[in-house]
Length: 280
Length: 300
Image (cartoon, rainbow over all chains, first blue to last red; front, side):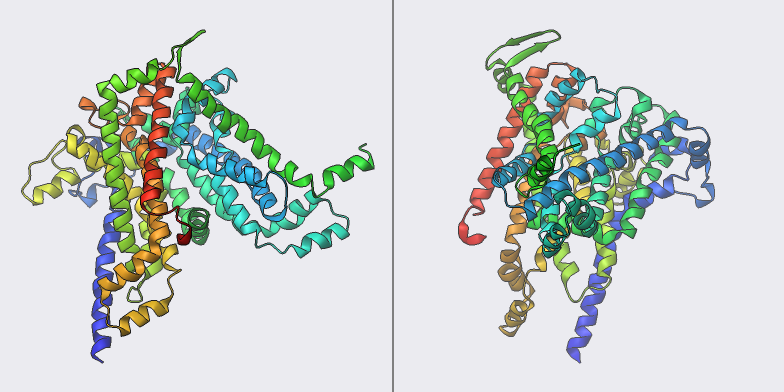
């Protein structure tokens, strides 16, 4: 009986401790959300503060962004297009590689592994300037193609798909071959649908990375109408207060879609991160 | 159209894998291998529009003789050490708590701690700039006020500039690292803990004798990615100060690369700094893997 009692106390203490940690971790986001209902001029002058009079909260920032801030919505559209294209292309490229590595025995397989490890090891920063030069000479500066190209190969996605494809039922391949299906038909019609959960996991992760991607778009985009959300929001941080309404409500609306995706598809996030990284 | 023979060739199990991997190989050649080689070549060049000259080791000599380069190296190194220590120690403890049978609402806590990782570094920077604003009534200054401290100018003070960058990184990566450690904890057989309990081991003995040894591969993995990420730090500095911080208090190696390569348009010099970053990353990760015994066969 004593033991059970002791256990309950431990559980209570742990819960309180974890609750405090969680509150600290979520505080920045909660405070941003609350502050987005404060007048922009206040925010500019006082920053995020505990001294909030809840009767003063207003909808002005949101009203403004939905009616006047056309440029912000252009950025939103750009981010959606860039993220969607990155997801489709990187999934297409890397799922084929992961699949081939898992089901076929071919010469050069080990070389391919070396290449995948090489891609993981080389920091993007060293590629930055030569890639920038390359995009300039291909006249891809300030284009969607220029933003997307470097992110279409993802080594960690290749690892992830290989891991998943190794668990596919190989008997299906032989059966399909007897039925006269081509190797490509087997992949696209039979195996790829079976890989759907892994595609979902990678789609969510790649989507998140490209939605939040900052350094490369910062380099290749010139005109403000081509900005993606992170690049655009960063330019609003001027020493003048005129942009703070869009800055604050715009920040909230940048996070919202990802948080919703996360809440709905949580287990894919977890699977995508841990299988690719730890067991890879 | 295509003859039957041709069809069979492309459809054979020998050829199909190469067709599957060819787009990936092509993009690797153009987007990774070519730029890597180009970076090494550029680092030996003086690049002006329409006029490129080979200047030998001059870019490297310029870097190692520049006091600014050493400020950047120092800042990146301090940042790397702090993030490695913090982002290994805190997530392990939180993961162990989250894995314990005594903890309730595990999914809720795990998800809540992960949510900051979804935030773009730019938005995180916007929030942190407003929490650590100069105003006396901003949250950070209010909090230190409770302890009787004077409000401070967080973004313009040497130590607090580093503090802001490390705090931002900790906030954004904590949840991801917790997931890694939680995945590792699943591999520890419960019987080990049970038999240790019978032998009278306390919580700390169980942690140091069972948990830590089992987590070792993951600790090595997280340490390695944190070392690499630490030396590559750029965004955490950029969102607070763009490329120029007062007295270079937040200048990192990659900020320096960006300043020289993009702003000054001195691509050759920037490329040389990039190659130096690459070498540092390789050497330090290698030493880390060597010291932690990751190359020993028995460990795998």
